[in-house]
Each structure stands twice: as C-alpha cells, then as structure tokens.
Amino acid sequence: MRRNPEFNPQDFLPYLLNQAAEALSLEFQRHYRGQYGMLRTEWRVLFHLGCYGDMTAKEICDRAGLHKTKVSRAVAALQTKRILTRRELERDRRHAILQLTAKGQSVFAELSRAAHAFDSEVRASMTPEEAKVLHRCLIRIAGFEIGK
Amino acid sequence: MRRNPEFNPQDFLPYLLNQAAEALSLEFQRHYRGQYGMLRTEWRVLFHLGCYGDMTAKEICDRAGLHKTKVSRAVAALQTKRILTRRELERDRRHAILQLTAKGQSVFAELSRAAHAFDSEVRASMTPEEAKVLHRCLIRIAGFEIGK
DNA sequence: AACTATTGGTTGTAAATGTAACTAACAAGC
DNA sequence: GCTTGTTAGTTACATTTACAACCAATAGTT
Image 1 (cartoon, rainbow over the protein chains, first blue to last red):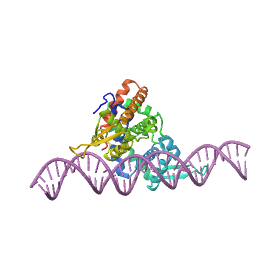
Image 2 (spheres, rainbow over the protein chains, first blue to last red; image 1 turned 90 degrees about the vertical axis):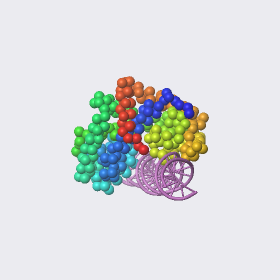
Image 3 (cartoon, each protein chain N blue to C red; image 1 turned 60 degrees about the vertical axis):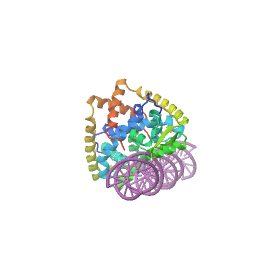
Image 4 (spheres, protein in one colour; image 1 turned 180 degrees about the vertical axis):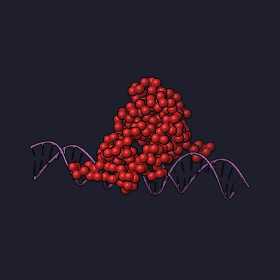
C-alpha cells in the first residue's frame, strides 16, 4: 500500500488536460452527435469550411492539424451526407476545392450556434480574467507541436 | 469563399482544449512510449497504482474516469509485461488487488521523474499565476462529467 | 521528351476503442 | 435452498484510428 504523495496525476498537465478535454468533448457531443450522426473529425472539417470558407483538403490538414487520411475519409463521409461537394481545379487536377452545400451551411450555422451557447455556458463557470488566462495558456500549449 | 470571422475554432473551448491536450500528449509520448511500448491507458493504470498504491481495477476506473473494459485490457497487457500482478481476495473472489512488481515500480519511478521534468518544462512557459489559474480551470472543467 | 521527385489524395490492413452481451461471485428476499 | 439482483471483470464484435503503401498529377532536371 505504498503511496507517492508528492506526485498526483492531476498535477501532471498532459493528464489533466486530457481529462478536461475529454469531459468537455463528451459533454458537447450530446449537442451535435446524435443530431447528425457525425464523427468528431467530420465535424471539424465542417467547422473549418464554415469558418474559413472553401479550401482544399490539404489546407484543412494544415490548419486543423489533422492527418490527411483522417480528412480524406471525413470528406468522403460528408460528401455522401450531402454536406459538401468537391470541385477539381483544372489548373491542377490534384487539388479539389471543398465547398459546403446549402445543407452543409445550415448544419454549420446551427452547429456554430450550439457551439457558441455551449462555450458561454462553460465560460460562465469562470471569471473573465480566468477565461482569458486559460485561453492564452492553451493557445501557447497547442502551439508546442501540432500533431501532423 | 465565405468567411465567418465572428467564430474561430480556436475560440471554441472543447476544440482548443483538444488541440492543446493532443499536442502535449504527443510531445510527452516521446518520453515514454518508445521506451516501453506502452499504450496511454496502460500508462495511466501504472500511474495510478504508482501514485496511490495497490487497488482493484474498479477503483482505477473510478479514480481515472476510465471504462472498465479499457482498464481490463490495460491490466492484462501490463501483466504480461510483468509490470503488475493480481492477487485475488479470498474474502470476495470478484475483487483482485493490483500491485506493481519491482519492475513496475522502477518503471513508474523513472516515468514519474520524466513526468516531473516535462511538467516543469511546460510550466516554464507561463507565470506561476497563470499556472495556478490554468490548473484550477482544468480541474473544474474535468469535473463537468467524468466519462464513465 | 524521358526520369526522378514531390505533392495531394486514397486505400489496405492492423491495432485501438466503444458498446453490449456475458460470466462468475456474492447479497438479499423469500 | 432457490430466485432475483448487483457487482467486478472479461469477451465478442463493430467502429475508428494509425501507419504504410499506393496512385495519379505536376514540377524539375537533363
């Protein structure tokens, strides 16, 4: 029954961060998953297109820090769900611009409303000052290395 | 090429949190993964046993917020790696106390040293005040709902 | 033009995860 | 003792993910 009181998992930042991230994602999933049967990665792709406008899969990979296979499959899934369309560039047929359909846009709109609401709900549990610090720290940490 | 400048993925807490958590975990993995070929879950189990002493799988589930199947598999793996042993209670043979072997303890010791070092490295990128706020917020968020 | 390298993207396969169904041991009511 | 319920833990199967190999289009070199 040895103990190691000097070191607590919750004092280990990667661990704590994971717990927090998981808890929050899980909580938010209730808002979007059941609704459209979308996977996290699909949702991310949608989010990026909605926020930043049409772009290629590669751009999404870079911006979101997602691997190309993940994006590739998410795009395929979103395509069959009529959320987005791909338009090949004739200038360079390797590239294809991804573009939300009308349906995609309305899903995005609804989702981003939900996201906003959820975000303020979470933020309500802290002071504005805390929220600012948290945001700053997370941005810094996220920049440590973006998982390709 | 529509844009939605009012809403940025990085302003959405679950998203940002995920990115930060992933970046940090990835970074730390270099310290422990290659070394022992251990999975995150296995590592977590080891960590809990090391920090809090011998306990049953159930207790690990509750404390770590991990599903029992995950723990079950992690324990099996750690057992074949001679990191821990299970001792059935004759009082109630459903329970089995998990216990680190000597090897397990030394792995834990090394790992927790690495964790410490890593943690202070990360903390060095922020002020003590920021670190305190970050910790407090994450604890609060992690408590939102622990994934069963 | 032919040859190699690079880039954007897909596919195949193996490992990891989630979910549900299951077993075994005990507890409680009758 | 027998039935029903609960708890600890495992197993089976279906999804998801990671990693590597692959393909097709283009760029760069000779």
